[in-house]
Amino acid sequence: MKPSLSLEQQAQGLAQQLKLLESYLEEINNRENMSMKAIIENKASIEAAKTFSKTSYKDALFPLGSGILVKIDEKPKFFLNVGAGVTIEKEPEQIIEFIENRIKEIEDAIKSLGSQKNELIQQYNNTRSALNNLVQQGNKNVW
Image 1 (tube, rainbow, N blue to C red):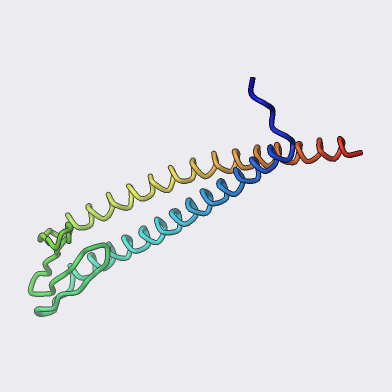
Image 2 (spheres, rainbow, N blue to C red; image 1 turned 180 degrees about the vertical axis):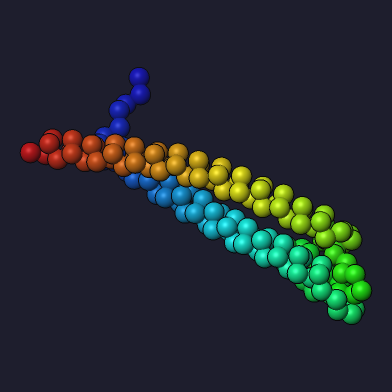
């Protein structure tokens, strides 16, 4: 038979759980913030792509953000960085569709993070409540 933990040991264990849950919540908040910034950057890229597709400049290459470049010529050319130093040419509509899909993926990730966050908050509150109960039990045993 396993010896039972003292109230102090139980309280220490719950306090450690609270610290761990706090760090998880902080990580989720950071990820949500990064995701929101990514959405803003992607939306700005869409607006820039729309603007540049209607503009005529000669031989200039501009980064739009989100791994997208535009070369301003008679007809603007858009390039998408697909990783490993590889860039491919895309039509403006394809770039906009790509970014809109990316925004949707980020929004889905934010929803998932929100669900994880809610679960952690509930776990945190339950753990905190259990710790408070232990402290109250300990105070009753002292008096």
